[in-house]
Image (cartoon, rainbow, N blue to C red):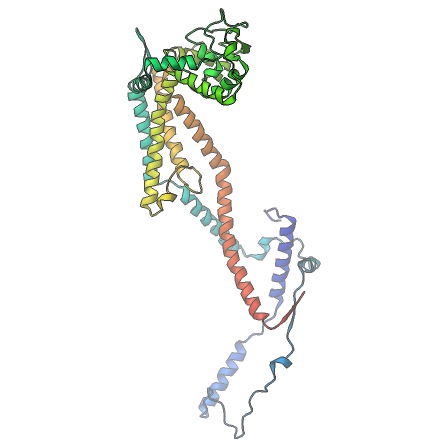
Length: 460
């Protein structure tokens, strides 16, 4: 009983191979040992009589040359090649139908085959195995990213004059605020009016949106989300509606009558208006929410100090966790990415790889075998540090949203690689190496058959 499951075609191949092996083993080759001993004895006798066995004897008669026959008169040999079906039928008729591949090898040969496959697996694993320098690069990038997050980004804090951000957030906010003059910003606000910008319920909505107020309306209005708004916001502008997810997770879609004249009919115009509206709101005191945060209003579950996930996120936005804070926290993540990718490319070039083949834009495991794992390690370290800061401060404002997004992305890729892609890729690598060796055998067989069949007629 074989430990392997063979397909129907593989069973046929096994039967034919087993039968041919049986035929080869049945060939009785003569024992040439006694014949060689007789020849050696005769040569010794001739030498004792004064004859040289290496020289032809002079019989005193004219030696006859070989009989010469014109080639065209020599009939060509005929070689019959049976069809595959005939070979299978013959093998099955001779008791080889249930033969397995293991029957063709000795235990020692099977052990050698297993060792060869194990060696090929080890060769493939070595291609993706990180060395000490790779680990040091990933760890250094993760720690540097965490240090920038702690020392420069910091946590937004309430101050008498508003929200006081960290140094890096303050720099980003100042840069954006001075990008346009007050006059330009005023013109932008006038040109970017949209039908979904109701700040309160009174005087604007027909269906009450719980929690809607000037400081929070952008969190509840899905169109103000920098990511979701590119779709929902354009749709609201084209239909003259406002789509909201209120503080209790209720989705409300309604028309704001006083903004009905702001509806657009052209998709491009609606998209341009949407982007302009983003720019006009990003530097306001309330700012825009971080990308995708509007969906957290649906998460009406959990119990963190008596608050649901939605309530935690709503409180974070109210305290200053906005789009600018998200951009500031994205800088350490970008530094981590750039450092790992640059160091990886530098090592490849130093190892002799062409520059154009060393540009690490893709984490494809075939092109850049180690890059994905290095990025996973780097972001894991940065994320673990951020988790430690959140646990130590007990302040959800310390959460690095971009860092956790990056960690989720690379964790998924790494898990998929380890559990699904790597075993399949390693199996493909081993089979390709075996197929290459098998092709050499086929080439030798074809060459041998070509020499044997030269000048012959092949039938079948």
